Length: 305
Ligand SMILES: Nc1ncnc2c1ncn2[C@@H]1O[C@H](COP(=O)(O)OP(=O)(O)O)[C@@H](O)[C@H]1O
Ligand SMILES: O=P(O)(O)OC[C@H]1O[C@](O)(COP(=O)(O)O)[C@@H](O)[C@@H]1O
Image (cartoon, rainbow, N blue to C red; front, side, top):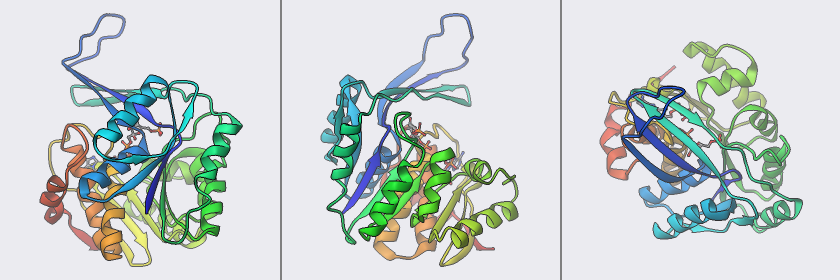
């Protein structure tokens, strides 16, 4: 069974307009709300690809209810711990071609809340895969993912990780099976430039070899991705197209990789599917559908480097 963990979910409030003028009233041309947060997006895309998963983490208040109602509507099983305070709202502003994000602050998570959550992971086994994705709520320490991965590795569970900053820096020391930093997150992690393919390959190889991470998938938005892992080192081009809304593109890549890896255990095919999934989301108003992904697959060119 696949479990996605979103410790800091969000209602994404997407607002579209031509131009934002500071210090005056702006009116949106289109706006809508999405059940978001990285693990939840992974569950949503897996669901669209035809794979079931259970969404775990914390939700609270009317925004939390919005998320659980939505998941129930689309038949995604969830088992969140309920919080007293509201789940955050993240503002995703698309003004012309420019995307600006204001991610809200997290609700309070008590020790009791956290322990209830961890207890849900104790029964997982080698049959299970866990996706840990997104930022950590401010109430949890930077080594939270590190502790969860250590615990799950000891239970024989495969862990996929998509996070950034200090949470990522700590978590990689516990050797998750797969990570998906983007090129900026990779540069931040090593406090080094990650501008050329050579820079990215060198840093990704360090993660693969020194941190014993089986699959390192570095996403690079419209430049596609670089994969370093047991299967070798590959550059994957992204299909060309009109980016409509790229929020969730990274989460779609994670879901795409996992979906194809489960079917084939072929890392190159999984990486190709990951790029097509990310691009299909970037090219649509919301998260990708299976049809949209499969139409783009032939446009992802894989080169061994
Ligand atoms: N403008 C774009 N054109 C084509 N593909 C894109 C574009 N933006 C994102 N993607 C696809 O989505 C994937 C993830 O995007 P990226 O922006 O790197 O992730 P994140 O959202 O995690 O920062 C890329 O590897 C690529 O396949
Ligand atoms: O947990 P974080 O890092 O604040 O990110 C949360 C945001 O990321 C998203 O999951 C989108 O992520 P990506 O664009 O990286 O795929 C949004 O749904 C959510 O608002």
